[in-house]
Image (cartoon, rainbow, N blue to C red; front, side):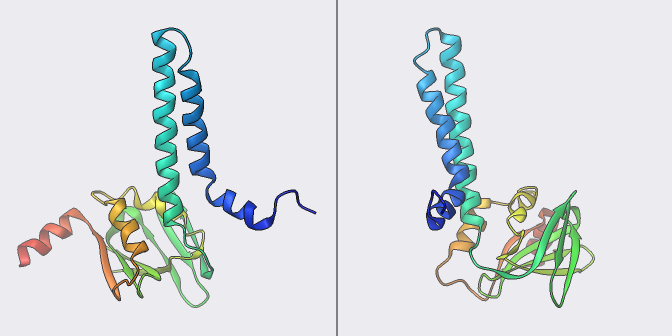
Length: 174
């Protein structure tokens, strides 16, 4: 018989990064009692680091989607790979020029420079690794991405990010 109920353990796992960050910040608050400006300054840095970890954990938690979707996602050395039951493929992050949220928020659509398209369900196994991969895209606002994921009534398709060179090209066409 487990010591912690499974649903409580699942909740703690989901919130673990946020709780660790808050724990680090709490330790920094405790360390502020130290005498001396050096140790108090160090404690202040620990508080800031803990709060930063908590914010990043909060964003990762918002990015994660419950449920299961077919396929497996891997991000290895700047390459996003998706292995699905009927389709799949891979795209290098350096070749990515467009990122869309399609199927009413159920799938990511990645488009490369050469026109290669890769559709990945947001709840596929390993899709949490896309959070870190997407942070490397220039000028991507993660808050806009998270807001699009959390939209109560998402549109059928939504452009999340365009490469800066492609964005300039679209502006000149209008």
